Length: 178
Image (cartoon, rainbow, N blue to C red; front, side, top):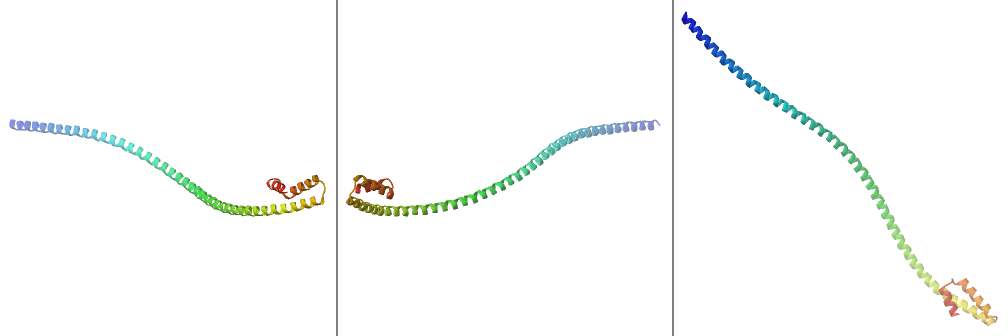
């Protein structure tokens, strides 16, 4: 019995030893699990923080995208308005160029007419002066032949010159010829 008791005692000690070792192993596993849990909790907290940062950046980018879309639509609208104004300006420019060409053509035509009329005037002026000189000379001679006072003759000559010739160069030449 003693032997049985001793065997039982040995078994008890063996079980206790195994229980202590198992308990020690369980405690170590528990400590390892707690460390892993703490590490996982830190990783989770860090991941949640990163997630919140990414969410915040996502929201900021989404808002910036909406603003860019709005600005893009406004700029497109302004572009259409400016294109319309440019088309209007091009149309006005075309009209102004056509009007300018018409005015230039009209100016050239008028300049040609002026030159033609000046030539006609010069021709008619020389013909008129010659004719007037002939008429006045004939009148002057007929008045001189009739007799009469010199003052009357000068007065008649002045009246004829005023009537036929404008004041200026032609009259002075005519008086000198007479």
